Amino acid sequence: MSRRSGILEFAVLGLLRESPMHGYELRKRLNTSLGVFRAFSYGTLYPCLKALVANGWLVEETSGAPDGVPATALTGRRAKIVYRLTPAGKEHFEELLSHSGPDAWEDEHFGVRFAFFGQTSRDVRMRVLEGRRSRLEERLEKMRTSLARTRERLDDYTLELQRHGMESVEREVRWLNELIESERAGREQRTSDPAAQDESNQSGDAGGLPRRRGGSRPDPSE
Amino acid sequence: MSRRSGILEFAVLGLLRESPMHGYELRKRLNTSLGVFRAFSYGTLYPCLKALVANGWLVEETSGAPDGVPATALTGRRAKIVYRLTPAGKEHFEELLSHSGPDAWEDEHFGVRFAFFGQTSRDVRMRVLEGRRSRLEERLEKMRTSLARTRERLDDYTLELQRHGMESVEREVRWLNELIESERAGREQRTSDPAAQDESNQSGDAGGLPRRRGGSRPDPSE
DNA sequence: GTTTTCATGTAACCCGTTACATGATTCA
DNA sequence: TGAATCATGTAACGGGTTACATGAAAAC
Image: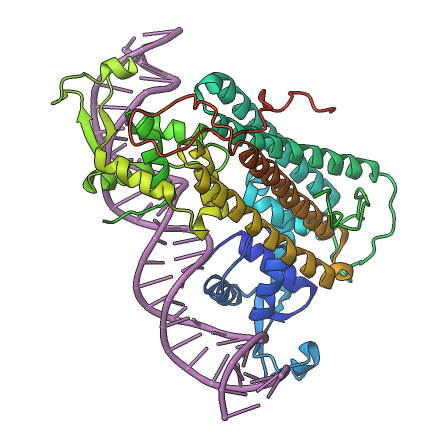
């Protein structure tokens, strides 16, 4: 019952749901796939994995595998400890997925939640996106009033910092607007979901993302 | 010698350099002026203040002031403990200001450093801005390669998250480019600095910010 | 055969928050 | 007079990192 990190636990369960992995690989996935937002060290990850095993959500499969299936087949090289999600773990993860409480739209949590939107039902997606948006909007409100009160007493750099900060938040709000609109647009369409889970897949279909693929042009004017 | 937070210490010294304050007010300033980036609690601030006093960088002035000058005159209401920067503290802060080590351009530090650019000499400003920029550029590089490697294995949401993340970083790089250019432009001009310090003011002149005042229009299309 | 990368862990520490305890001042 | 805000503090805990210790497999 010790180490409960919330976000790390969530991410680990989510990644292991796709396929079993050992700690080292897991960490790399955490720091790229879910990247930008968070980088966990081994000192955090390994104890967390042990705790999840203790909870019955994961099982360890060592090289001299008790269940046949040598880990070699999975990774191409001998892996020490492969972690696999148990049915209980899967159930637990899906329960976490279905929650959309206020903490789900805080800075740290939101990124991870979004990363697993593919697994998330559409109504939960909507609640998280809208929650996040209103969170940012109230933050903007605060910044605006506080700026209005102190405007003239601040030097140019502080002001510029404030301005840039607000613009960043505004930009994220616009992003959320687009996403929410896409979700709304894809509401009644029921397109076929690309990667359907075998069982207990509670996610609806993939909604509709802006579909602007290709990821930010390499050379933006400069 | 205990509690050394770095960023909090820096911000506290910087704010107190402008004028003496008590803890409560200090915290509000921390969470607005330097806002967006960080919000400290009393549980962090007060112990830090004590430590700074123990270091000889601050002095406490209680209501029954030993130095005359009742705190009432400063705030309009009776304040309990007013903290004032000592000469040693000022000296220390200016030394901190002059450093531009690699940690100065990490996410957490950069914001605070920038907030006190008004007090910072131009060459240090330049080094910090350029350091920050190259830091972001190498991060972009990593993201690009990692994205290229895993592109097709990721679902749309993860991809969109990645894309948005990269765009955010690219945007900050462009911002830095503008700032750096402004600094370069204001290099030989020697405009009069708006708020000159009485003594030991090592900051050159204010350089030149984009001068686009007015802080982000209230209604951006939506 | 040595270096690099893969792979797993632990103990000490750091920075910060939460929740609590306390009390003065202002305002309705 | 009672509620809200101002104001100062502390102890317990939380979540994470760093540095270290260890060793196997791959690459050169």
